[in-house]
Amino acid sequence: MAQFAAQVDRRLDGSLTEDEFRPLRLMNGLYLQLHAYMLRVAIPYGSLNPGQMRQLAHIADTWDKGYGHFTTRQNIQFNWPKLPDVPAILQALADVEMHAIQTSGNCVRNGPPTTRNSSSCRESSRSPSPARRTTAP
Amino acid sequence: MTKAHDIGLRMVRNAAGEPGFEVMVGGGLGRTPMIGVTVREFLPEADLLPYVEAVLSVYNTLGRRDNKYKARIKITVHETGAAEITRMIEARFAELRPLFGGADQKLLAEIREAFAPPAFRNAPVDAYDAFYKADPTFRAWADTNLTVHRNAQYAIVTISLKAHGETPGDATSAQMRLIADLAEKYGHSDLRISHEQNVILPHVHKSDLPTLHAALLQAGLGTANVGLLSDIIACPGMDYCALATARSIPVAQELATHFEALKLEHEIGPLKIKISGCINACGHHHVGHIGILGLDRAGVENYQITLGGDGTETAVIGDKTGPGFAYTEIVPAIERILRAYLGLRLEPSETFLQAFRRVGMEPFKTALYESDSAQDAA
Image (tube, rainbow over all chains, first blue to last red; front, side, top):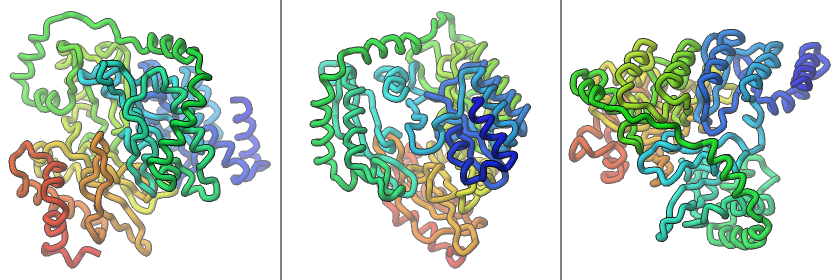
């Protein structure tokens, strides 16, 4: 966290170029889109508890435009974060055991257990979530 | 979607009733869509980790590092061939299996406890049954947004983030807080985000459903459309994305409001429309029953349609219909396809995908291109 905050500072004061900063930000799930940065937050197994959902709402209100976008990768994306605020957003995520690591680049990404069937579906053979966790921790 | 993943694992039981996995490798969407091949029909549960490691080990040996567009495991599987890659995986698995002494199974047992089902309540569901009969708004929602739970007193609730005219997958902070409250009150504090961009409450007692539904309706989260036309997957497209070649979100919004105005989506029934704003296919258009791919033709948005895609256990990549359509023509084009389906289906229970598989592409192509507006198709 401190490392990335220092990298953001160096980007802001110009000592890191965008090309140099790019791999560093992507490792923390921070993309640069058409109009703004976009932060892609991991939701492993697509699973959230209410406290985490409330924290996402808090992030949307405090550092974004009051909404978030749930994606086909079972992530949530914030579309309008300002670069100086990103370390604070990552800290807010860490406070509820969330992060934006491995949501970009060549790595094992978040993979979905078939959510609706997880531990409740009548036809389901067994819950896939525990196996998912052992294969991609 | 297991067949469209690098490694897909489908939970199955063998003839003796033991749990295990069918292992599929080499699926994927993106610019080179492929359906995974089954390398193992039945893998005992305890062999999962060494087997997946064997797959990755073979991929590590053979995988292309010379070209990032050919780096994915699907290319490796395709270039090596299903039989040979299966042989290599099994040979590597035989080497790796003895190295796994059971620590992974101990860890799995611990993790399994963390995913234990909640303490289910035992209470009457008469109120649910009565409300279902009496309130048509509730009934429509229950018919589309509930899935059968293994406990007959419970239901799996899908909260639609696809209100007609809104951006698919978007939730406001107020909606997120309400969903958190409802999960706490009625859903054993469990929330799941689906790849179809909705939110799932996996365990809700049926007696709580009328109250839950009323709260959702008030917050714009009560749309009864899960699995229907307007339950569209759409990528952010050119409204946000630096890679996009066309807009996706407004196409999804216009389709939803157009068919809502025509009151047709419940009549049309189960249908998956998936929209991507570039060939990277974040919107999974290859496996949409109707897929829409937004391209850039000399600076103008052009939308290519595919039909017959399927992301389930009968996975298929959709077929292109022919020339694409301009932004203003795409919604009427989809209407022509769906009018054709309504005319072609043998009975209302024959879904779009079933009808497409029975009659093939030709009647839909005819409806799409041999109409009055055919000359507009570019």
